[in-house]
Amino acid sequence: MTTIVQIDTDNAFNWERIEQEFDGDILLSKTTFYDNGQITFLEYLDGLVVRKEQIDALDNGGVASWERIETRYEVDGSIAEKFTILDNGIYKLENFEDGQRRRVEQFDNPEGSGNAKSWDRIETDFSADGTIEYKTTFYDNGIIHDLRYESGVQAELVQYDNPQDGPGGGAKSWDRIETRYDSNGAIAEKVTFNDNGVIVQQAYQNGVIAQSIQMDNPQGGSTASVKSWDRIETNFDETGQRVDKVTFFDNGIIREEYYNAGQRVFMNETDNPQNPDQSAASWSNRQTEYEADGTIAFRLTEFDDGRLREETFENGKLKQSVTLDNPYSEDNAYSWEFQFTIKDENGQNEASGTAYDNGDLLLHLFDAGTKMLKGEFDGDGSEDWLARETLYDTDGAVVDVSLIYTEADLPSYFQDELVLTF
Image 1 (cartoon, rainbow, N blue to C red):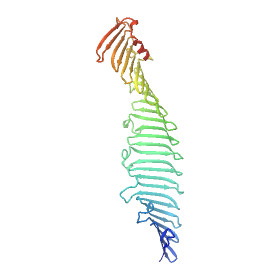
Image 2 (spheres, rainbow, N blue to C red; image 1 turned 90 degrees about the vertical axis):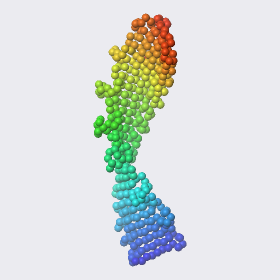
Image 3 (cartoon, one colour; image 1 turned 180 degrees about the vertical axis):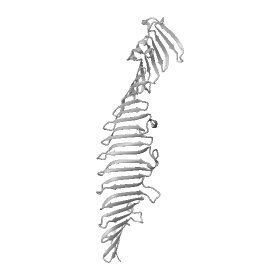
Image 4 (tube, rainbow, N blue to C red; image 1 turned 30 degrees about the vertical axis):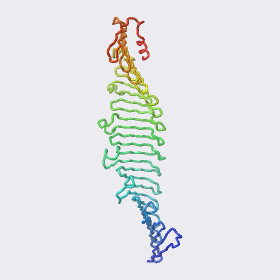
């Protein structure tokens, strides 16, 4: 055994010393001590390197991001295995076939007490030509990511939240998320299985969400329901802004919502259209219109008993309400033809009134929500007066009652308020 030592006394190279061991004329090993403190050890067999070990400078904390690298080679000189210990404690083990990397395993501080990353282990597999095929990440919080590739492009990702804990356990509010991608790697489909049994299916076009379907415990039936709805279907435009949304409630009500530039502009609600006899609400249909800023502007309600109510809003507050008794039928459910209410900007009553089937009219006028006047019109001639006016003070006490006997003496509000409203 012979050892040859070379020393760079003139500092002409980037190394300080090289030690080579020979068995006769056969080189067995070569150790290079570099100026920066790194050491490289090469082991030979039949003239070929079979193992290489690299050590970063020990005295000053190192000059590279790794502490040690050990590489093994096949008899033909191609790389077989590479093991790296990084400065942050991460271990990386790479396996090769025919010189091509086929698998990489990374461990976060397997021998240390602290973690450098949010994951514990990453396993990556490659095809024979070195293209990535699979990648599995085990996170510190128990979540597992399984990522599959096609031709080097991500094709599918399945995320599991602590599968060993069973449904409902884990670090997240979901149990599993399955995501599929198109040939360009853009997201195409995503299905989320939530802990509470709700399933969310999302479809994408060119990486932008196009549709979302939410289902409340479809496998468990109505007894397993955790929401007030059974299904929600939402469609989006090419920019990802909401276009329409349909909600199917457990009680049979169906709500349709329509959007412009992502802002809701119209809503239509129908009570049990498939089973009208199983009404869940006091109305059969309700339509609502919204301003450009999303505040309510108008609502039309058709009640089960035939009433029709029109409500007008200003700045999101009710301004006027008119209720008609069976306007599409000669059969009346009530003794009046219509009722109305007008409110001021503070939401307090300004006026209200009722027009009865027999022609009588009843009108109330308010000041800041306090009733100040009651007007009664005798439309069927059942009284000896044509109209009666009652005035109130701010405490609600009657201060004056006037009787009117002729049309010429009728106060103008009997016409003005009702005509302008209806």
